[in-house]
Image (cartoon, rainbow, N blue to C red):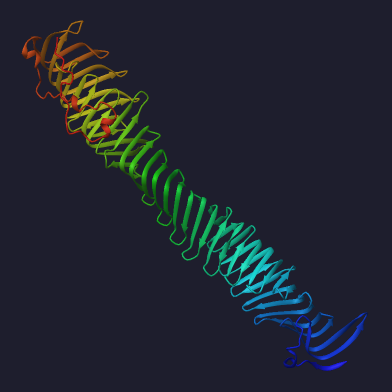
Length: 599
């Protein structure tokens, strides 16, 4: 037995075999023969050296190149790695250490705590299989199994992994953590809990320094009722931004968004949607190439082939802006609004819509509309069109207004005026400011014209003040009716009878059964009534002092009869739907396009 055993390092550095365990110090040392092997027992302040590292303990047992150490065990590797344990088994040949009890590994500011640690001296890798806690400044990591590589501070955690940081709490089954870069890599299903929400993923990374992250393989993010998912999600802390790439999808209790790419700024509450974007809220739905929604201001803009649904309205445009607080929207460029309830389509260059009042104002480059009924389609164009919703005693009615250069076309009638109004409650279409209507070979004009409809069919046509009707079959001789007020009643779409009241005047050309002209008749009276059979005049009755004369058809006077105020405006008559959609042509067609002479 020896006491105070010590080797002087300065004398033996050049002779030492670094692959053998070397006793540096022990208060007591003795040897024992155990079988074929000599065992060294060291007691008190034991220091052992191997592979440029030192081991300290209260007592040790050395067999060949193996060490069993007990009590206040401490290993020192390189300049910064320290291991502490209650006991240790070390194999010098394989450079493998097993540490037991209250094991602690210190590497600079990092601390690893466990009950059992396997440490590879040569590779500087620590393994644990019975649970461990790893601390690094503000980050705490826990798992049942894992390993830590000291040379580059790379750690792999597995089985019930938990990471707790000031920024988040993370749960997973497998995790790779790079301490030098302060970045963690996800390689298994992972749940990350943050103040801003919870994120689930199967792979990706999180950088604690930059406070940025990337998650792939369809991760999803949840914050209260807010939910987001995509092929890849990127997260940025300052500002707090979530980017969703590839089949991106976001929803809330009342809102839903979808697109190829979505960027959500949680600080500014701005959501950008790119590529086949979709935004839905209640009965409102918007689709477009690009959508931007401001959750704080409750506004959105959409551009690039935009498609929107707002209650009964379907809207298409190249650009839409909507303010949810004021419930107003603006649509620009190639705007189309389809009312699925009232059966009309509205087209224009710019449309403004007030949701509360139900007001559409359509302006810009020649707005126009299509108005459907069971038997016909009416086209209306003007410089400005406005649609207004009105609720009366619980019933909703629709009104339409048009201003400046108003033109209309349908198969049954065509018209023009400078302003118009459709009153939905009474089903009356009012035409103002030199209105003109054409039906078949007849032209109707007055200061004001009112068309009364019943069940989408024309029932009454009223002409008020300076009322005039012109009819011709050859564009040379014109039948004419004039009065202060003219009212034509229709039955099944055909004229039934016409009433003329006040200052009645008529020019009428009589024809035989072969439609050859016989004579011209002129009459003035206080009132008259004209009865029709189909579209043909059957009977005319004159009242209140009628005065008239008959002229032979060959007389020059008969051929040129014109009542005062006569105007034949066939050149202005829309011939097809396109005529109401375009700006007025500067040239006017001749008033006698056919050029026939009367027989």
